[in-house]
Length: 190
Image (cartoon, rainbow, N blue to C red; front, top):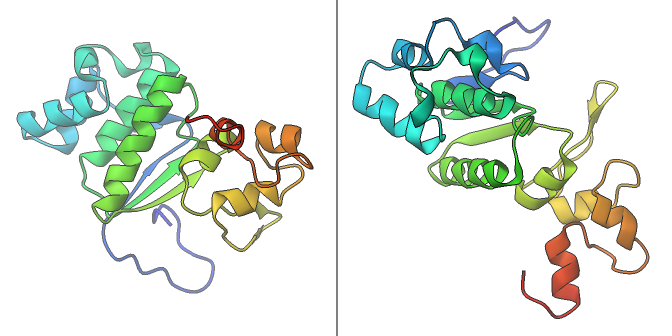
């Protein structure tokens, strides 16, 4: 999808710029500072600073990208890719190395990008993140994708690839896949 390899058959037509954040974000870094890496993509220093701030790496611009923590590298790679202004964003394990707060920030950023018209395709083993924030989920196994479904239907109908909440509440609270579902079922407000 990112155009890194030619299809073996058929054609791919993208309705806009495609950008990808790989599972190993280090492959995107080429310079001695994060600031230089971001400036490579966009010469407008105001845009670079704005994106760095948005991705919470503004205080890291003078550091070598390889000296950043795993979560910081994920956020830095996302900032670099977003500076290209993609219409289609491909993310491979984007929550790897992120704490709960950073995951919420990532989710809000992805929601805003989606509302602005970007298509986002995310591949992840983070079932809780997908259950909470995805609009549709599908399972890719042995070269075949399952039909996309809303997260609640997808995860409550799956025995193995599901959330911890779904496994714990199966048979007690049908359809519960997030902690918020359990809280609501008990009359609380998440």
